Length: 99
Image (cartoon, rainbow, N blue to C red):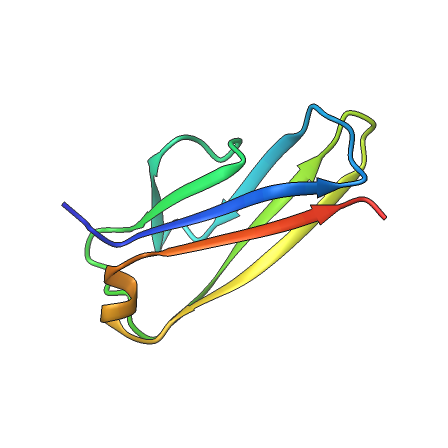
């Protein structure tokens, strides 16, 4: 059982029109899904078995498309410098939008 969990959430899509389509991407050598899919507003990841979350820098990105076809993208350079921080997890929330 791997306790290292990380959640990434899009909580606002500025100037967008519902419904929204989400497509998350992440390094599958570092993370795996513990719940949900890459098409949910919240990406729920855990460290892959054997990966120690220490001195790691990895990217997690989101592409969100609204009803009118506007596409917004955000990239997070996620960094963990200690096992202690990784153990207690991380929650990243962002707002993106069409401008």
